[in-house]
Image 1: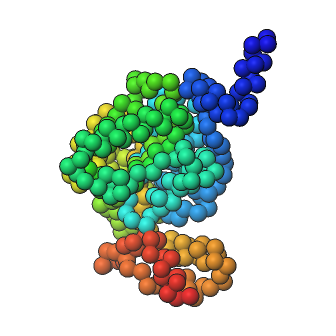
Image 2 (image 1 turned 30 degrees about the vertical axis):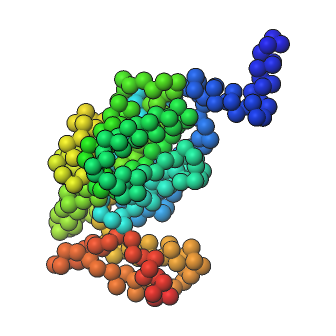
Image 3 (image 1 turned 90 degrees about the vertical axis):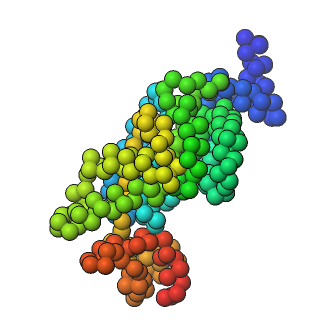
Length: 311
């Protein structure tokens, strides 16, 4: 009994506390670092602040909720976001960080990789593979609930991301941690042609946007990304072994959605009543295709700059 009390005393006393807590984290499945998931707030944020993306809203809230309710998942959650620039992919990844750790990119357990910054030289892929493997394994040992975000996957050197394959399946063992509790996000414009084609055909047929179903896109995106030689997932074993939980399509945005983006950002600046700016920015965007002009060519990406111009 005295020995137990002594260990507890050491555990809760600094600086020894940190050492014992880290030891506890490495041998226990119940240590979740600073993990503070709030699924209800995540769902609210997705449906309130992400525009025109019913598929992404449904998939992300459903898959994240299911994954976190499973106390012992068989493998990590792997979501791959695809769609044109400015459609909300990075926004949704930030929301995940905010509602899982309360601090998004400032959390030491949310790790973001950008190819042009972290893996700029294609001839060093072998070196990058070793570094990435060590980084992921080290951080999983530190925190089983780590979140890894790989942005701009279309610029990732082919073959590099496959070093993660052992971490994504159900059989690999990472020493001293339950690696299956981790979350991986891939973000890419690869596959946008497939997504935009389905959205355009749906619009030309006079159907509602919400009639677009995931079944129409899931396999098509997987094949498009797998066969795209400029994609970081080109001929990837991660796709071949079906280690991606869901491919998440982000649809092109109409003028209506762009104007919602404008209104939201104006409200953040305390200018909710400036409907003139909303209309001016919406009218100043470029829309495609030439015949019909249904979708913004840059989504909401250039909205902040245009608001500055028209204010």
